[in-house]
Each structure stands twice: as structure tokens, then as C-alpha cells.
Length: 409
Image (tube, rainbow, N blue to C red; front, side, top):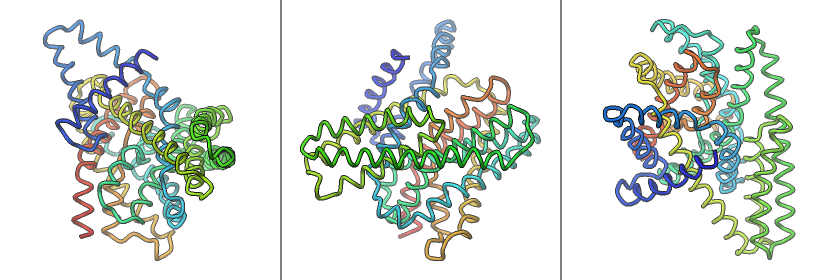
């Protein structure tokens, strides 16, 4: 696993350089396009040397995407993303963020799962309804890693940027909790029990919030007590992330939510007058560097996963149809969520379109799909997930800036 991670990191560095020198695309998008191109280049080996092609395919399938993302990258990326978010701005939009990240995810899960169920059956790919809901839960969360970098360049109004970023940071944790609850019901062949899901959600999400507050408070107090030691402060923040994320998993609470909350609290504490400029600089640069590097690693992983998919035209067609299902469901989820918001925080039609299009999917959806039991159901869901993620990051990602400028100019 360590050798694989070293290789992926090295490839990410090379592709970052090539993107900067030649493509000049937003880094996440450019790296993923290049990594897909590398995968397709290796795939061409099939026509020259089938033995080496099979060996390479097996090597890619042997990469433990789920472990790399959930056990290592996710905590770092969520903390690095949230530490730079304006907490005051987020609190002003807290109603929208909470509703979109909870009610919106649940509505989207149900809509996607239901339409996906009827679509797969109509195409002769019958999937149990519970597994269709599982698909809805894994594809509903928007990816903060993909969203953050793009919105900074898109010129979206601050309140809208906060809504999108805040929702993306929190709905990962919510989506993972909903996924785990539905997945346990699907595999245990139990009847649909809303109470069971509510209990799981309360335990993991509530526990994650509490853990995040505790970790954030400890980190804030420690950093303020050593304002003249920036390197130690950076070390403490890293210990909070790595240790806190592991502890969250050990206690079976949402590490994703814990890292977001801890990052918001510690990031806000850096604006205190008590904190030296030297310490702020060290903290900001350190977490920005980690964010950029591991961002690149994640999108290389997404790109090379294409080699692990066996081409199937029916599955590809289902994936393309699923793109429209996901976009439609997200728009409806945002529309319905508005009924729970104050009038001043409701999104008008232009904002709803932007919120829908800017809701990119990423590595978390693929990692969750990879955890499904081996078999036809996993192959169908993974294929659809991959098609949606690639479309989301490349097509939506490249056009979101133009869409924002066109609708809001």
C-alpha cells in the first residue's frame, strides 16, 4: 500500500506540472483529465501485449481506494478545506447549510433511488429498491474537494459561495451516515425502518459534531498558549486531525463532520489578535500545501480507476441517464428545501440552477460504491457512479464559472 501511495503521489506531481505548463485548467480538473488519458494510454497496451495489460489492470484493481480515502485523505482534506472558511459568513447562512446538508441529502437520496430503480428495471438491469436507495445516498453528497478550488475562481457572490462550500463540507458526513444505515438494511434484508436510520444518524452525526467541538476547543486553546511557536502549533493541528479522525472512527462517530467542525473552530481562532502573523502564515501555508498535494493525489486515483471498469455499453448508457437523474433530483431537493428556510435565505430560480450545477460529485461517491459486495449490483452502481463523477468534475466543473457569470451578470 505504501509503495502504491508513493507512486500515485509521484504521478500526481508530474501531472500537476504538465497541467500547469500545457493545459492551464483548474488543477483538480486538469489532473483528472490527464490521469484518465494515462489510463487510456495504458489500456491501448491491450492491442500490443494482453498479458501486461491484464497485469496493469489487476494492479489498479488492487489499489485500496476506500482505505486511502477514508482512513487517510478524507480527514486531512476536510480539515484543510474548512480551516480557510469564514466562520462568520457560514453562521449567517447556517440555516441554508444545515437544511441542504440534511433534508436536501435525504430528499435527493429518495428521489435518485426511486427513479434509478424504475430506470434499471426498464433497461433489464433489475436492482433491489434498497440498493437503489444505497446508490442515491452515495451519489447525493457534493464533494468539497472538487467545489472549493473552482468557486474561488468563479466569482460567485459570497453568500452563495458559503452556501455551496458549507453544504459540501457537511453533507459528506451526512451522506456517509445515510449510506451506512441504508447499506446495513440492504445487506441484512430487513424491512425499511426509518427509526433505525434516525438513530444511526443521531449517533454518528451528533457524535461527530460533539467530537469536532471538543477537538476544536483543545486545538484552539493549545495554539493560543504557544503563539510564539508556529511550528509546534502546526504540529498540534496535524495531531488533532490524524488523532481526532482515528478516535472518531474508534468511537463510531462521524470523523468527516468532526474534522469540518474542528477546522472551522481552529481556523476562526487564527483571526484572533493574540495570534502572531508568523503563526498564521505557517498554519495557512502548511494546510494549503497539504490540501493541494492530496487533492492532486485523490483526482489521480479517480482518473486511473477507469482502467478497472470493464466496458459495457448498457452500463454506460445507464450512467449517462443517471447524470440527468442526479441533476434533476438535486434541483428538486434544493427547491423543496427552500420551504424550510426563511424568506431572506431562500434561493431564487437562478440560484437554484447554480446550486444544482455547482454540486459536483467526487471521490467519496466512488469510494462508497467500491465498498459494495462483489457482484452485478456493484458493477452497475460503480459504473453509473464513475460516469456521473467524471461528467460532474469535467463538464460541470469547467462550465460552472461561465454559468455563474451568465446568470448573475
